[in-house]
Length: 473
Image 1 (cartoon, rainbow, N blue to C red):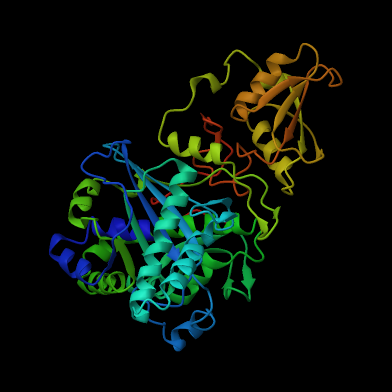
Image 2: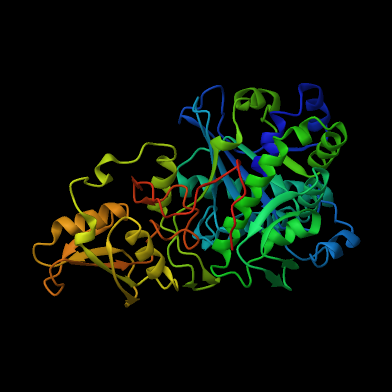
């Protein structure tokens, strides 16, 4: 959602910039100096949706608003960062990539806190800092703001360690800010594959296209109960919502409507926290040529969505090396070695797919993607859990295995004398994020296997951008 707020700044008109920036809360954080051209070749902005029941200055939100949002009381929620987005903007590319981190991603938390869900990185450090500041003689307000600073710095360090990116800027929004922003611009267009009803989030929506705002918008992006892939489906929900928000903000209906524009500025300035080194005017100049079609929404590579952990219950498995490769390769051209061989006839290979990932239904969707590329469909089934995916072939079947490997984006191949001639067997491990995995492990806009970029999959859903409305779970 914040990435779209940033896009708004590029179009609201320079006369409005002072009105926008004067009300923002600023924090002095440990960030890289972005400059005109960052040393690592990109501007990286960490965008955070905070599940706290306080405003940007630490004041409790009114209970009547919390009631409408189904957000409990002022003591609920803690300081979990339930939306984490890395906005990656390569130098002079005219493009931007908004990369989501599932809130339950199991990673190493900075500050010596060990491995936990990524949404706790802020809260662990904030709580530790607040405890140390007790008895210091500082006011409760000062302790609150200083401990928040510690939380933000620890979250930044955690993301940097995980991705290898240098975070140049930081932006944070709370629940009520989200609520007010969506109302100010007249709602966001979204689309659902099927109707949903969830008492936890308050989500109650029909299937198909619809416009949502306020409490319904918050319910849409917060729901995870009752979705096929839980937190991973929620990430896709957040991405299509941000795409719709960016599209709406960049439209003439908002930018040329003085009432909507002023309401928008009021909502943003009262709800956003930025790092104090962020020159919004300068950033707007850098971003002025960015259009909706040049922003793509993606998700970090993930493994087992039901990883059992020692302290945190079920979490989403994450491989640090895969995430670093994923971020490093954002926007780079596909590996030509993975291009299909035009001389090979795919229909001469019958493909069986075995699901060893633990994700129900994955084998069927992967087989569907392969038959769409001309392979002959074989059987699907389950297999014992595997961490790594593999394509196996019988004697003399290496050419067919190579064709399937390229179609899946570079999965490892190996010979198995028990597999009949003319047949290939695919085993989908928990690492699989290639064609057919959209809606299971990623957004489908860019899928990687290690450092290798996947070729386009004609059977996959279109990438999520700010140019249209895509139906999701």
